[in-house]
Image (cartoon, rainbow, N blue to C red; front, side, top):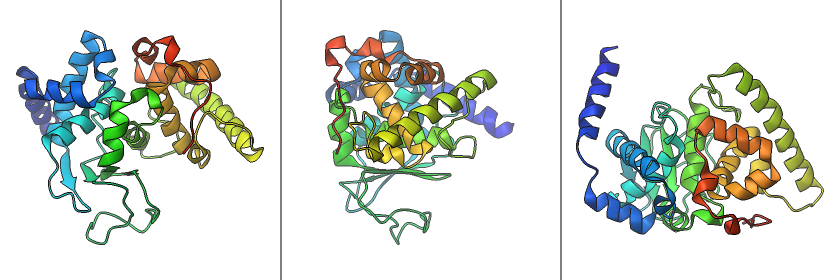
Length: 268
């Protein structure tokens, strides 16, 4: 209780002052979502960004000796999109944000918090329960500038961190609503099964092949689409879109003109 009180007090003090002007300039330059938000959403994003920058440990690896202020603000603000509707503890199971200059491989022997379960494949992002989010800065920077490209590694990996909050990563985050949870499990299961079937049949798919691995990956992929291609997601999977809207408590379709919708999703 004392720790929670001190943390809340520290956050109130942090948010009492104005958002740094230089950070506004950073977001205007690096984050394509930023000018699309309403004034109220932008103010909320400012607050969440400040908390994340302050409370997470920002670490450079793979030759990235120093994590710059621009990097921390750009990453934190993209993660903040997932918390515009509610803070959800500010990603309580992610203590570190680890940035690499480009694609990386894990495990890295010098990082004592990594374990044998992590992949040795080249990665642009990785969410590690109870510890960290790992990100390739070149992908982060490129995707931040182009929100309608359909991909955002920061959103994807921090969606995994939300899935971790209840201690079980099954593609069903802590919903705090039994009726919503019941509906969620059915709608996601059907959409996930349809996606896997389409992949097996060699049919075009909206979600990436990676989303077929398990429902946790499907949830993270769907979250990317919700924030980056909301019109397309709604047009193809309206029930899934409405569930995500109820969970995240935002309406991304208001940020994108209808002419930005695309009929298919480019797969890498």
